[in-house]
Image (tube, rainbow, N blue to C red):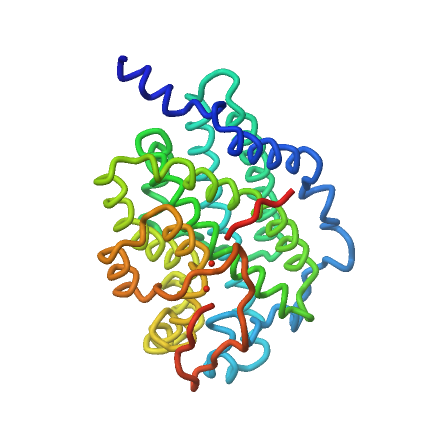
Length: 351
């Protein structure tokens, strides 16, 4: 069998009835429950207007690492609002950049699947939804009127090359997909659970994004459940070591504001270091964000002793979730509380 035939055989999935059923369920969900950012968000409604000194842009005091810090809470209300608008706009821009990379990788992968593969349909459904998310995020940034940079400069430079991993090392690519999607999804769910005083733009953007990302995260989990156990033991071992590194790097890129943010708002360097990611509260957040991924790694044989050590060294270790999107049990810690344990682990595919 030639190398080309081996690669095509590896991408043939129609013999796996359970996996095919998952793909059909996800594709059905994308067909029957999807959103258009310019139909499902009434951007020009007076309710959605962005006006000066709107306290709904103050960062949540429980779920946002900066919002719960005493330095932020001690600032004048006008400055809290300005910081909140800038931070939320930059998170949206980072999401746009990440999903742009994801779209290119998904299309690159779909380019080479065999004719008749049910993966082709779902990958294109997901790409369409991600394109709508980039439109939605950019419109949010435009409405806020804040010129934010988004991803760190290095990742923006590397962005043309990262999607190539979807064909060269697809398992690594989909680990990267989870590294980008899980922090945003986790944060937005927590904000929606807490947020009684969210601006309508923030609330609607998050609601749409969380609803559709559930399918995207499910696909990445199912893809890795199918592919990783079949990898050569050495390749799986290397992936087990690189997974926590990828998670930590991308989480930092997505959730940590750029240096220009601290300069613009005169945030002391020691405060930034404490918030991102030295304090007990922020360390707990890092651990919670990846509880689903740790569950996945355990289930596919990637939680060996060395991998566990890497997770611990990077401060993103903890107990695995019992099921996907398991809510945080108990109150979040504050800056005077000890670091809390994270809740324990199976994933369900949404219809």
